Length: 295
Length: 336
Image 1: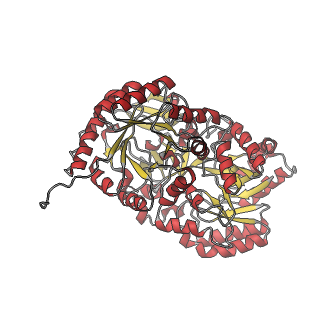
Image 2: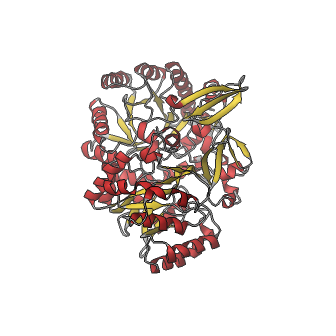
Image 3: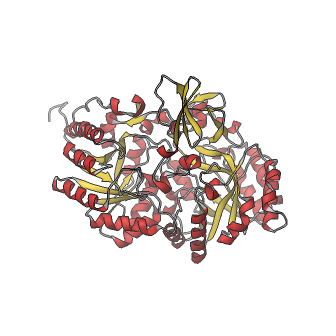
């Protein structure tokens, strides 16, 4: 089974961004790294000039590099940037908004990210026929669906990935909630989302941590962690696990997962170690194995 | 023509909800051009107990509408469950067998099925597909021959006009009723809290997971165990729709995502017509027959005024909106 690092979802300063990917390139035992801006096109200019170096270093480190699309493409400049992802000798593209299907399959290889609705075999086959190389399933899916889709993916000879670690993206909007809670509007947001390296916690009025706001994106407060389920996922035919970046020692997180994958560590015993490596956030596996996502 | 004389134009099509056969007949009689409804199962995004149509009711409803010059669209706009796609395929086949004018779909696999099996029939793209720009819409038009797209409720009027300049298919926009603040069809907030989601189950913040409780002097409403509202006992506790809840984030305490408002864009009808929109959609298949009739009558008057080039009558529908407050939503850029 492969390990993929998903695109950083949060707004980190450019230097921290560059340092993060340099360390991933040199130290993280992963197969693929998806990078680029997923959440908000206004963030990209701050680190766009760092991307070529990051790609080169990651490739030198033996990783396959994939560039993500935005999760929600609306503005003309966002549409132009989406089309530009398919220019010659660019890396593989991860489609996270179906807008990009307009250009997909014609020139560059592409894969499907977790924000595209792949809920059934018919959709998976449609995308495979269009040329998708691998598909990261929506984090909302229960295990029974994952098993069915993994089988269909194998039949179509495409990779099947699941969201295995990190706060889960739950919604995307035209409205920026970071701006809203700071009394600002999206167009004059002052980039306040950079104050929260793992997103801004949304508590219920009974002080229960519930959700996380990240600009126009809403995530879970809890962190998905399927380290203890790797055997069942492999048994179902899942071919890759997605680990989503957080602050702290994320390289160490990837090493823990690699160790479990290689059978050197028991996946059911790594929660305490994983919990110490990132921001305080309880673990969940409810979307796949429970009655609700938060479980 | 004399200066200042009203300019007649094509009346916008009024697309109205029906959760029951009685509502369908009521909407047709009140002046709806088109009715949209769904089968009574998980294939449609308003899968509520006691709502929606059996196969026989659908056929009768379509016949009733057709006899009075109205059209019926069948919404099959959830995402088929892996291993159970046949249920959704059958819904599409049955809708066309019952002479539906079109089906409203969101899922790529289901669109592929419908385009292949019913190449001569009309496919509409559901708002659940969240096609928010011309490239996305053109992809669906080219891949499946989609004839109309229901636009997501995250676009401004200017953006809608720009989209219409770049596409050949018709656009339909929401004009009144419940308001999603997230890109539709791409939201799993409800399943995070309750396990039931619009995409998979056709429900959002379902009543089965709602609990109202008195605590101290407060009335608390919870969804899946999470507190969504806490108000003084004397106040009316709003239904705990997750994205309209009251929360705390940093120093902010209030409606982090959206106030408990609903959409009323009646005043924007002339601009929407000018932006090239073909049809106006009223949300609310879960609403009563009386509600549907009142809203349809009001919007029929508004679209008659639009067609005649006259001022749109002021909205008389404020008493029907959720929480008694309404908004023009994303159609105005300041919403963002």
